[in-house]
Image (cartoon, rainbow, N blue to C red):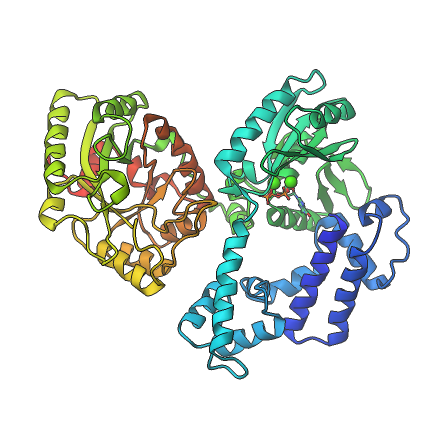
Length: 575
Ligand code: DGT
Ligand code: CA
Ligand code: CA
């Protein structure tokens, strides 16, 4: 923890206290301390380690002991207790620019808003303007801040496909150093988050300084941020930061566990460790009484020691995984090998590169039992969409191909546009002739929430529709999700037994992890598709699998883990 993070923690504590309506002196003690910590020249962690953390201006004894707690455990008890008393979404409301703790409290008391989503709903329903000292202008301003905040969240983060590729290159380069035995990827990249703030790597070496020197001198390094005795940090092109920690084999497990995170997950683990009389850090377990440090060479030892089942990195977010592990309720996360086919594939009949035969051949090589060819419908201006006449020819050709081979079943399908006016691009008579119908929004993205949700709901209510593709339309780094009512969409999908897609294109990853988990929890079936436009895209399936795993998705939740027979039964395909 550096000074900025400690100060930030105190500021958050102050906000929580103010929200609770506590004594203003108490609140101010935290904000004053935060300010003076930010102004320090030296890192508190360094002062503390060398035993010279005596007097910090503006920080009394009580707060000093909290700093020690933070340095040792990553958090402090009073904070953890306070945050437990408050609904989890409240902190996020207070983080919206222009909304302080007092206003948050009033939204909570008068509108029942316990999350940004609920607050944004209240604004859209014009319930904020009716509050005392509010008005139309305030309400609009709040809505704008919420939208901007959501866009900022992704700002400066790097899509996993991009960062992952570079991380692997760096790993290989580092591995070529004679001073480095092995390099592994940690951080959010190992947890397979859709975007990452930076790349975190761990190197095993007995000569840490030489390893760091090798690292900061790599050819593509644009700037050296830090070059120490056991850690280094550099900037790569594209303002991509790379952090490296060097450890010896004996404490590798402890380091990778710590550096994989998430921070929230680690804080929770430390609490369990403390309850057993140990403090836990990146070097091992320390017995609180004897002071003896036990390093772990394998990550699993840490979970064993804490009485937990091993937790896959993808779900280490303190979102219930630790509780599930303690009660034996961990999901058996889906794996790439469970996938038996791809249900969203474009051929050169619309905007794809390959012929249907080439696609089928590539799918056979992957061991798939089926693929659905789902070219675009005609109103999609960009994509050489198929007229009804061409679609009928397309179906015929697929029939002929199926007669020629037993190695794979090609399903005839479409990615049919949900037009801006809410109608589908093909008539029901045409849709009926297809094995599988995917619908998607490509136009009218800027429509308001009600309108766009209504369009999608209508499509999901059509009896011929099977799957909704890339349900929120987001494109990483390009455009945010369109404004839709996700809960409504999920419940309509559930009622009508429709399938929601996890689109594996690394620029979409849509549904994302959170929404995939929501859909799964509501009992909605998912499809993990690649939206292939050229055969190399079939490989993107692993990105979709990562999202699904982060969303606690199991094999049974996903339609394309079914074998051909089960799939045909589920989709009502007779032949
Ligand atoms: P990112 O880079 O924003 O996508 O997310 P992470 O999770 O990779 O975060 P990062 O790079 O700041 O730190 C890597 C891991 O190191 C993090 O997941 C957990 C651990 N870590 C870093 N800072 C702290 C901290 O202040 N407290 C605790 N408990 N763990 C930390
Ligand atoms: Ca990171
Ligand atoms: Ca980092």
